[in-house]
Amino acid sequence: MFYRENGQFKTSYRADQQILPIRQDRIALGLLLLAAFLLVPMLASDYLFRAILIPFVIMALAALGVNVLVGYCGQISLGSGAFMAVGAYGAYNFFVRIPGMPLLPALILGGLCATFFGILFGLPSLRVKGLYLAVATLAAQFFSDWMFLRIRWFTMDTPSGSVSVSNLQVFGLPIESALSKYLFCLSLLVLIALLAKNLVRSAIGREWMAIRDMDVAAAVIGIRPMYAKLTAFAVSSFIVGVAGALWAFIYLGSWEPAAFSVDQSFRLLFMVIIGGLGSIMGSFFGAAFIVVLPIFLNQFLPALMGLAGIEISTAGIAHAELMIFGGLIVWFLIVEPHGLAKLWSTAKQKLRLWPFPH
Image 1 (cartoon, rainbow, N blue to C red):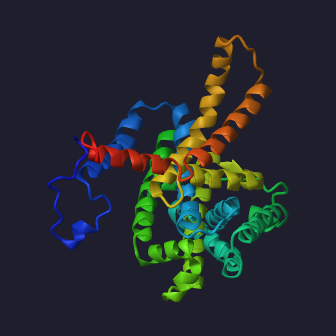
Image 2: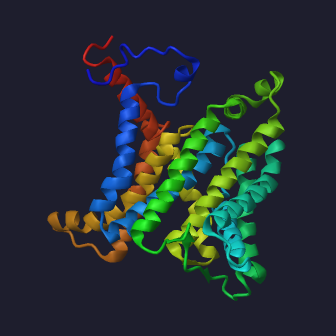
């Protein structure tokens, strides 16, 4: 009875085009943002910030970028880890080589480096698609691993490719504590998520979805496949590159090319699949599932085994975590291939009819 839009009339085009047309959704989102910015900083511990909240926020941003390419434009990509690496090392070089370079412009420039890198490896999408495109983007992953490990200019001539940053500041405020890092990453996530939501609702977003559904029919009605695909690669790579720079600068502090391996690419793809393809909300659900579930299993699996009278070693816990994780992914693909976002949408639809379904 509380989730109804009865009486919520739209009397202008602006009201008809708003992101959240139902008043209850706007109130819920406002309360969620207030809790994220005010309540969580007051209640969360330092461990919660560093182990769960900061990785979740950054991974949600990266999954958002992957969802633009895979979910909205239908271009399968296995090179997301490479785009994160280019964004991280690009921002690092601008930050270190230019004296007095502020943090925010360095992050944006790192994202632009990832944009050009994504467009370069997005060119095969003009000719191939499906599994062939996935292999072409996988080549970007191996190329970036070789580039940042062998070309020492990118890593300031360090032999191992390991680099680090310190003394991070934004508008003169230091970004050193866990709370400041969380608030900084959360602010960027909210801003980019709002921009992405408006972008997928615009004309270019409709072009992406037309290419995803049937590229031949989209070309027949006047949509340029080259423009649509390359812009999807550009926007996705920029967002993923900014997320990679945040992952390196804010979460890791010191990193090497192995931090952006092919495992990271698969992890981001799993986030999008589990959360929901073609859904901004699905990016958040998928990031929460991927980040929180391993920590939950690692903390509570020994206790559950102890209650059952079974002793399990640390290696056994790691293997069981991978088995459970993989099993849940397969279960989601079978039971709800549209992801957690579809379950959330179905629940909201049922609430709109409850208690008088028809």
